[in-house]
Structures are given as C-alpha cells and as structure tokens.
Length: 393
Image (cartoon, rainbow, N blue to C red):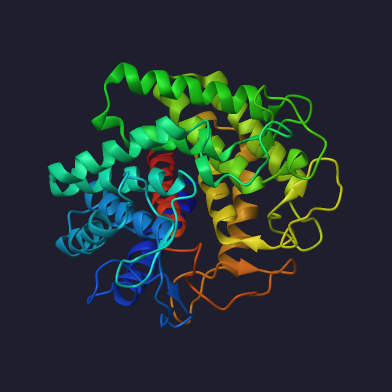
C-alpha cells in the first residue's frame, strides 16, 4: 500500500505539472488584451473570446496558489498578474459588484446578477496579493469578500426572478462557498471574525441542508431548513454535496473535531451510494431525492468536476479517519475518472460525458469549465497521497 500511495502521488503530480498546467499556459493567455481565453477546443484552439468572471478569477487564483504553495515560478506569477490586472480594470461595476461576463477587450456583457463572481474575485485577489505582495489586490479582495457577506442572504438582489414570499428557498451553494472562501481569506481576516463565520457556515450546512433520515445533502431548503415537495426542493446535487463535505472536513480538522469529520465522511459515502450509476459507472450530475423525473435534462451526464471533487473528499476522509470504505470508493472513482476524462493525445481533461461514459462535448474549456477544478484537485490529491505515503512508512 505504501508503494501504491507513492506511485499514485507521482501520477497526480506529473499530470498536473507536465500535462494540465502546460496546456492552459500555452493556450489560454490573451497576450493582446489581458485575461484568459477559456473556450478551448480539444487541441487548445480558441473558439469563443468572451471572458467569464468566474473562470477569469479562478485562473488567477490557481496560478497564484501554485506559486504560493508549490513553487514560486516567475512564469506562474506573470500569468496570474495578466488576469489580475485585466480584472482590476474591467471586472466591476461602479458599485463594486463583479460582472458575470465581459467581451474580449473587457466591456461588460452580463450584469452582476449573483455573488459568485464576487466570491471568486475575493479568492483570486487574496491569493494573488499573497503571491505578489500587492496592497491594491488586498483591498480588492476584502471589498469583494465584504460584498459577499453583505449579500449572502439575498445573493441575486434585484436580479432575482422569483416572486417574493411564495416559495422561499436558500441554496447550499452560498454557505458552502462562503466556508471555503473564508479559509482562503484567513490571512486577511481577524481571527475571531474567521472563526465566527466558519462556525456559522458549518452549522447552516450540517444543520439545515443535511437530511438526517437519508444522510444526503439537499441543494435547496426553506430559510428554516425544511424540505419543500417541488423540483428544486427535492434536488440532490452530488458534486456540490461532496465538495461541501471536504470543505467541512478541512474546517473540522483545524479544531481537531473528529466527530464532525466523520459526519462529513458519512455524507460523502451516503451520497456515492445514492448517486453512483450501477449500470455504466460514474456519478450522476443531478438526482431527485424521491426518484421523480428531474427538470434538468442533463441530469444523467457525468461531469469532470463532480468526480474530481469526490477524489479529494475520499482521500481527505481516509487520511483523517482511516476508514477503509473511503479508500475502496477512491479506487473505484479514480479508475473511472482517469479512464474517461484524461486526454492522452492532446493534454488536459475533457469535461462532459454522456451517461454511458462517451465524450459529449469535445472541448477542454468553455463557459463553465476553466483552469480550476482539475489543477486544484490534482494538487490536493497529490498532497494527500504524499501524506499517506509518509504515514504508511
């Protein structure tokens, strides 16, 4: 087993540094206008030049993170700066809210209709400020973070299409991302502020969204944490639920709360048992808690980020608890993921498979897929496997 952890760590490391990072460094940087191209076909050719704020900020974060945590390569810092400068100039409206999309030169295309652009801006500029020692970036990070705190209970604000008062639902996405974001902002926040926010987000995620009967994480609940019998109220998003659980494990590990770690591991394992496709393998994109038909027509697709976040959660869970079921599931998900998503011919990873596991979209990046989930997961899995290798000596 010791040799297995060592060999696997090398696989994740090599794929990150010699496959994924070079693909995006070579193909995504817009040298003329700044920022990044994310709409890349299989070979890395650009097929659309619009710039989506989530993905722009995520790419700044990833290159800055690699610079800070792995190796201070000037090339990585230069690419991070390329995006940070473009975003600082063009990314926000006059009130400081972050747009959803810009055209290639930086003119706004889509209004700042929810807070997730602000979340990723705070993550990006916090990590970039740490890498570059940039005071302006630090101010941008804090302004974006305060935006998120201010708008967290009404994330879409004036852009909310729902009629007020009839069917009020809150989304798991907000507290789960706030938990991870707050950890990212750790070095910029007062200690008591960070601990207060982390405690509140964990309480909300594990208290309101976790269904104690099924052990599953619901995507939407009422403001009081109750279920509603409707499409959105029955929705299970396996990838979100599992990703949220490794955020919770990360927080629980800070305070040595093994009970909370085990509770999060239970949710991961329950979710996998519920959402694993027993006929074709892989994890479904969406599920209905009661087995009813879903309105998301893509419900049975197999997505890259869902599987990658699951690998992170399973390794973290095994590392923190030693529970064999985590390792058994890791082997199963690892085998499926590496067989179906990695492109040995042109580099980088495919993102979208149909239920049978065949490539659905022949792209490496688009409106929703950029340089984030793949490199982050490869890095985190590599680190977890290195730790497991050292522990098993």
